[in-house]
Image (cartoon, rainbow, N blue to C red; front, top):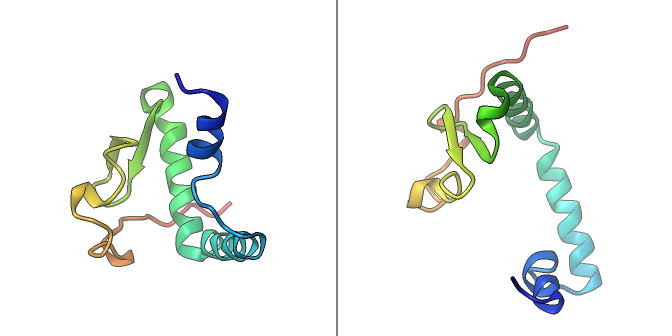
Length: 98
């Protein structure tokens, strides 16, 4: 277990940014999170999680392979890095209209 100072440095503040840079990054991150593709992926992952129930605890939905993976395994394109990832390689079905 790490002490409080290490926790702050490692977990809460992974990047040392100025106040201006931090605000600009927050704006960029929010704009990216609100794109239609990201919204569709998030909605699909939430639908899958509701269907899976407790069996999905501690796991992430991998949109490329279409199955549950550990959080660690679902990062970085299975060890290939993120350059090869693209929106055409993700399977995100259309949500049902209410």
